[in-house]
Length: 346
Image (cartoon, rainbow, N blue to C red):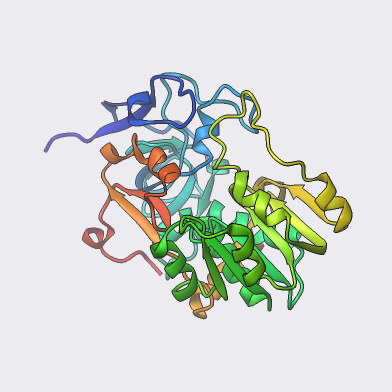
């Protein structure tokens, strides 16, 4: 039997803007061996994040850039195949920053053992992973929604936005999603339960559409996009509104910074607040978020959609697809067909 190899996606060129397949290469090396205190994980699922654009850029960011020639940084979930640490055993399912590769050696402090064995392993990278906890803390802690508030979410059909809308609904809010195209606005209404959905690609006047959907103004705006869509929402803020800055995916580069309308007058006149945040601000409370999110899934109060690409060779071009809007749901790379491995232990 041929010994397994470790296929890895390496960053080989520094992108000027959105990463593309040409900036990466796939190589093959021997499967690494864990040292004392480490474990070897066979990755089953790899995550694709909009934040990866910042991770490979030399522009100022909240994390150090991925070095050229290094494995692409990525959250991943998989199964422990060998362990030299007493707290982890072969067969345990874990998630962590394991990179775009088939196998990864990791220290236990960088891993989370996955306890939600009744839910698909892939959820550990989406609704129960960084996307879900981002939605949970961003909305609850920065947005501070109250029952009856109108909550507007941009990229409302995406992995974070769809979760935000459903959490807001579960908290008694009226929800309005902004998404691109009839397929995504249909998802907002029919699967994610938004009270209204605005298609920004439909050619309608966005100001009129927002005013119609939000006759009493916008109490909470969860902003995943920045740019002209957010400029339009700002004009409809209610008194005391909270604007939550989660992402800026519509801006392809911040060098030089793009020019646009000033927001200060809107914030002043409406006595509104604007706050940026990172989910890692609440790392010590991630367990709280996952517990609440998992309970909502089991109760049928939180649904999710996944956009699955099969095979490691799909990874290099996967980030660009996010920025083109190709995906419907959380984008994932599947490396292992779990149905062939049988059910996970309960």
